Image (tube, rainbow, N blue to C red; front, side, top):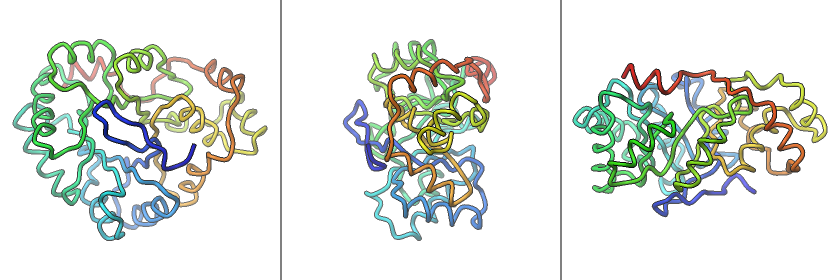
Length: 275
């Protein structure tokens, strides 16, 4: 394993397995040092969203860095307020401009009961027009996906979900594997809730690693794409330094057993009813 490893999506596009999330990073003074450090240590994938309010900041910093567009992979997501066919297309144009003309992966941020198929049809159009390289969804349950797949012309390439040791999501991940839809964890460390787990702390101590590093390694050994976020440059290095050790089968099973089916984010079914 290496930080530049990729997963081949179901349409043949190569997506980095280990990306950098920019959720809640909205100030240049905060963003610039961590984005610069992320590029320095080898991150090639950056995950943002219309909801985060930082697409323009990310686009500007990547442009100023001098990195070639073909050397980075950018993901963004359609905001809940922009769902629906026309609204999604209109908001995409703004996102594309803010991200300096590059969006590799476009996701529907949350399933919407009111705009379920219309938003996806908008993404299919953008994919057919080749202005994005891949399209997918975020926070979709198996029920949502089965409903979408019954009418979709283009199968989602990715489902970005809350996933961490306290919410392992194995039934959903098994279904995604059957459907050849990549799994991406948007909360790989459980928003910090998992970092004090004593069983994972014991494994981390044995390897001379932090709990966060052990959890990120656990994800990668299951072929889960990860996008940890941080506003601290030293943590960028920490998140990248997970390729010099491996978890054995017993350690993986120990981490599996701490699952509580416990969410830190919203319930997708409740969001489906609201949007």
